[in-house]
Structure formats: structure tokens, C-alpha cells
Image: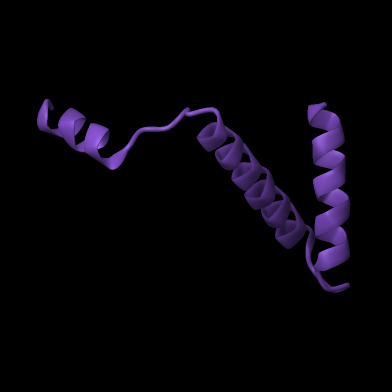
Amino acid sequence: MMKDLVMEVTREVTNELPENASAAQIIDAIIVRLSAIKGFKDIEEGNFTTQEQLLKEIKQW
């Protein structure tokens, strides 16, 4: 499944970027897109720390 997602994102990104985009720009765009997808999935699954929770943890340091 992960391979399919990476392939899909790679196709989308390469179709959206200009023809003269460098390999580094393409890789960066793929990484950003995959990171955003993971972040949205984490939010949907409740895997995140709220600001209030973070502030409580910081006070305990």
C-alpha cells in the first residue's frame, strides 16, 4: 500500500511541477506531500498532542 501511495504522489507531483524542475525540487515536493498525508491521517486517528497537553508537559521539565 505504501508503495502505491508513493507512486501516486510521485505521478501527481511530477505532473504539477514545471518541466524544468530539478530532481531536488521533485524529491522535496514528494516528501512534503507524503508528510502532509501522514499528518492528516494521524489527526483523523487522534494521534496528536494538543497545545494544552504540550504546555503541561513543558511545565514538568
